[in-house]
Image (cartoon, protein in one colour):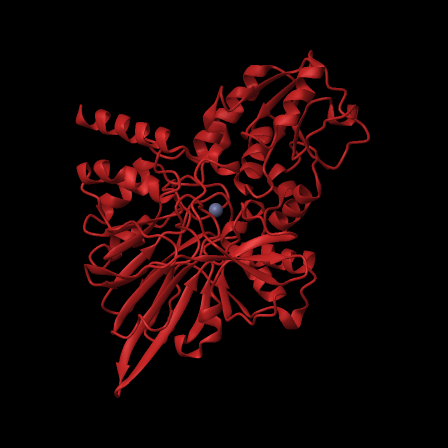
Length: 491
Ligand SMILES: [Zn+2]
């Protein structure tokens, strides 16, 4: 790993978010190499250390996760790896930390937002990781600047589905990179700071590269805005004319907790928070982060946590917000007075059966796709950012390689300059001003973490069209989508 970095300059390497079509386990290395009195001096930071979602597909017995391989950075002191920056709290960007600690590694200082810290503290508790094993954590905010050796890094707020999400401006003085983190350009916000487009404008002349979250690029238009999701929620609930509303949310999708709450409040419906352990854990963390539901509600509605003893006290007029697969007999739900909004694709399917059995009407994302909200930029968001940074070279991440490849003709038409070849995990690029070079390419590995806390090495392989990945992306559909977008723009 070390031998390829003998020339001075800034090096970038994806370690987990860029494989052929495996798109989680995010982790990106930045190493600056300088000559100092005839000696080579390196400074390294890493952005994110996630876990790979599809670890069961790797076929290792007793696996609990798979994580990117940063062992060389931890073991070889010459890298001078001093900081691990965290864009946000989602498992595919954060949970690798847990498995490295369990395997006995000592990680450098972590830098992340307040909410990320709260989620990490919950993980420490779940995995029984004591105080002495926990790396130092420094809370960061937009506007601060940090320096590690020859690398400067500055957090930039990002709109995503949870609190305290960041991108980073990373520079060695010669080359400046905007590492986007997960984001959309949405400036409407009920619980977090929106993407700081103003700062990007300020840095526009300097930014040479954008390491870009292309997760949602196959969608045309602008990613759904929070204010529009809320509006639609209110409209759909109102139109149902029912008193009892069932509105499940994803635990990691904080945005929907808040929007569901605000919709209920707007319609003056009482609220029952009711879900599984994960749901309540996240609810507690949201409150710790500073959201005071009672205070926002004032005396306008009642809020109950857990099953209500007395439905009459809620006037039989309420929204159940939670992660329930089963509404049981506890809510006296009947076709006459009840209605459900199933706002996610797979997770809430059992609920459909529940509603069908009771003959309760419900809507799904097929009826209103907007109701799932959006955490990732669509193509239109990237066009906005491209307008701000017209000269930057785009480095795709958080998408399968074939998506980036398939995007190239449209990218050319829209004047997006894209790095070539499309980076795969473990490819090492040297970035220098507006120049770049692929220095080395070699297969990456996943470290499969097992329940006995050990790691097993497994080569990263393309897994197109299998398991959960098949449902998320299809090569053919991707090609088609980009062709349609191109046609639209030609007209
Ligand atoms: Zn995310």
